[in-house]
Image 1 (cartoon, rainbow, N blue to C red):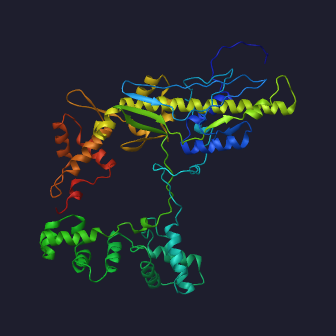
Image 2 (cartoon, rainbow, N blue to C red):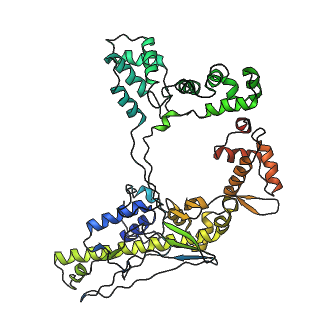
Length: 499
């Protein structure tokens, strides 16, 4: 093959390490950002915490070799929405700049792994931090009780196999026959009987939490009702109902129940209320889940009739360039020590600029969201307006993928509560009058209608369609059913109950 030289024109995006860092910081949650900042402090001598009282997050230093650094602050404002940068970060001058619209169309999740989530830094506890504690799992809790029990080695082996087959809700998910087969395969020298497994299972069903080890809902309710004190009001009737008429209770056929048990409505209501005090998922009382912190990235407050958006100053510590180490950099000196100092100084500058860019972008996007969802903050979910990523991207002059990353795992604290920024985006439904309704608003309307319904005659999906149509919102019945299921609201026949 003959070799030749060819000239080709093409476009491609070159991602510098500095730009990659800016993009990565942009998509981190507040807790992941704290971890990233701590790593930067540990690895870069030029960075330090700015703990001097009354001093802003920006640092100003001057040396023979370095010019005085400047800082800048940007406020994004709307007609009735004001924004304020609550935590300024160091913004040192540099020959390179971070573009306003970060090109994050590439799937950076394939390149960068999210930093591990850590708890908040030590300091004053705030009311918006929610900390979970690591708890023992249900299996660990049951095995601990097993260790405290006086049973034979043979029964202990059976009990361990049964406990392994209990799920997080507390139910036995494998039949005793299958457990017996498994035991025979693992311990061929032993001969086990099904009656033995039944006896050990009954022992486990007396463990805490009450009702654990049941094979279905009916059994766990029976276990719990038998453990109640004998003088509990309506205990005998509740046991009779569960033993003989559970299917009627599941169908909510209260008229037939009242006739079979010869009870009036008030008495039957008392019996059912006692059964409803039992836990259908006893295992949930012992959870191995650890609740993560939720720290808001922005605050929304109403000040003098205007909604103000500001960054949470506690999401990241105040940083600055260490003026002493920066003064050691000598211009024109090419020694290894001086090169190392220069590299650390440049990395520190870029890190602070990336933090500044992240804050400005987050503040700008949050302000635009609050401006468009002003009615939500005034009147609640029913006033939520339809909003898509393109709307905010167009308003702030950024790409939709940038908006997606900015709003992911970022939280907003408002008088109505804490919300993820993604919560404010929803699809729209056209009304008769041509107005747009967001799916979130329709969810809220459905919840309100069902909350106000007559429990004896719950609203069907078709009736909800008619009631919404009276308010000018046309929604198909299948849409109502989908939204209702998304809200974990059962159908009308399962919501029926005695008043």
